[in-house]
Image (tube, rainbow, N blue to C red; front, side):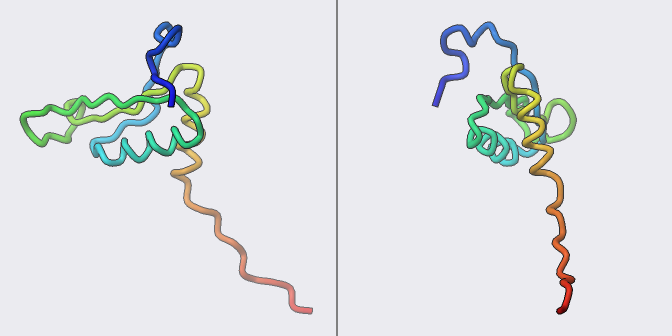
Length: 93
């Protein structure tokens, strides 16, 4: 796995592609994106003294490189959509 800030990549900007108050969900999304080769990192903005998960003090972000943002959002959007229902009706001959 490639380090996110190695070499010339430090000049590339990072964008938030997913935010959640639940850290476990952020880990799942990060792993999902990495499975497709999308370089990503997590940014935990949760306030450490209290188990606060409300508003900006309770957010965990998954960030991707700017050039991967469109792909990452598409993957996340596709994953969040409900599966299409298959038609069980078949023509009887």
